[in-house]
Every structure is written in C-alpha cells, then in structure tokens.
Image 1 (cartoon, rainbow, N blue to C red):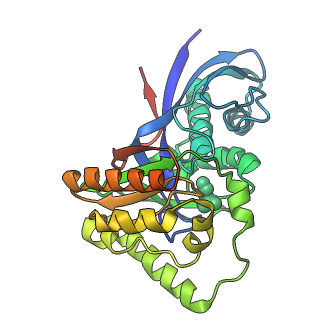
Image 2 (image 1 turned 180 degrees about the vertical axis):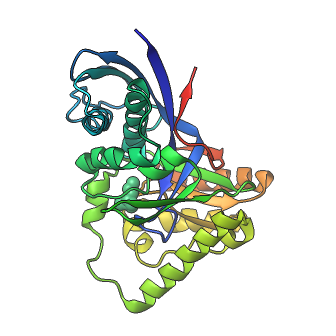
Length: 307
Ligand code: HSE
C-alpha cells in the first residue's frame, strides 16, 4: 500500500513581541512523518527520537492531528504513522507543532488531499493544545504555510501568511535544558501596563511590515519585547549576558524562541552570523550550560512531501 513521507519545518513562534500571533518557519530543522492508510484508527508504529515520546496516538500530537483530520474528512478508515523527530522536545522550536503539521498533511494527502494547508491549521493546533496548555497557532501555521504568519484570531481561526525576508540570517542557540510551554505560560502576567502594550504593538506591527515588504532593515530594529521576554528570560541561565554578547558581536537583536530555552539572534551578514553564534555558545558555556547551535534562514515553503 502507498506510503508517503512528509517534512514539516521547525518554527520560531513567537517572533519577539508578537506573542501567540507572529511565527516563522526555519530551514534545516524539522520532523518527518511517513504515513500509510490502514483499515481503521490511527496508529504510531515507531518514533525515532533522542527523547522519550509516547506512541499512544491519543497522547502524541502527530496521532491527535491525524485523528482530527480523519474526523474532518469524515473517513472511517485510518492511518499508521512513523515519526522521525528532527526537533528536540521542549526546546522552543515548535517540535510538537511540526509533528502535528506533518501528520495532518500526510493524512489529508492519503485521503484525497481535500483540505488546504490553511484548513490543516485547526486540526494541527487542536493537537498542539493537548500538550502546550494553550490554543495558539504561531507554530502550527508557519510550519504548514512556511514564511512568517500572523494569527489575528484563534477561534474562529484567522491566519495570514505574511511573507519572508530573503537576506535574514537566524542564529539559533539551544541550551541543554527543557522548558515545557505549559510551565512557561503559567508564569506570564494576567495584565499588562499600557506603555508595554503600546511598545510591543509597535514592534509587532513593524515585524509584520518587514516580512510583507521583505525588508531586513525594518526587521533589524523590531525585535523588542517588554512584556514576555523579561519574565521568561529568568528561566534561561545567562540570558541577559548571552543577549549582550550577541549584540556586541554584531546581532541586530536577540530574544527567546517560543517559550524557550532556545534563543535566536538576527543579522543579514554570514560572517557576522558566525561571530554571533560563537559569542552566544561561549557565553552559555561561561554559565555552565552546554548548547547546540545552527545558523539558518526562513523556510518559505513549509510542510511538503519529500522523497
Ligand atoms: N506562543 C507560544 C508561547 C508558543 O510563547 O507560549 C510556544 O511554543
């Protein structure tokens, strides 16, 4: 029986101040799902991952997303999934969203490809909700659509693909520490002072303008967050110093990727990117934290079939 292979990229969501609203797909990191039709139900036959993940399809975002898609398609038969994790769990790079997006896409494709990528955002986001403790599409939407996305509303879901910035270089450093999104959401404030709201809104709008115009110079001055970053930074050892040294090495901004612990810095110059990466990794080390790093760019395509 026909077996297909789908790749979904990792994501940065939130892009800086655009909490739960702005997300971005990145090249070079992602999850792969191999899928095949079966007579009934959703099964996960294997998971290749450095981390222990449940093969119970009701507890894994890939299995949940596949079931949601079967429900939407009103199909009584099922799928079996093989999951290959390229993204570490609890790292802030949209790991659970990528598994959900790939499984949703694969299931839809096997059963006639009737739903658009946009229509797959809702089932993928429902799957992510089961592990993240919140309903937000800033990882599932860019992982499916590629580029940067804007979620105006979750229910009803209203997502727009904004665009990409071709010259953007993104330096992602992931310290060896797991932060669960649901824990990093619990510590956030219920109310925000008006001046911080206005500040974050101005910067978020500038990010939207930057991606829609493919304008790095605009993006370079927009990565400022006075609401979420100062609180979540406390969960990441050495954050302030890593940021200071990234900027000193030439970065135009640095903040937390998703709910952390990954952080990302930006530039449009590859030689600078290498210096920034080195400065960030070395600074984490000074705080006794091992980390992995990658210099990457925007993935403008999102979820796709692969050979
Ligand atoms: N927007 C979510 C958050 C994404 O920051 O909590 C988590 O990956």
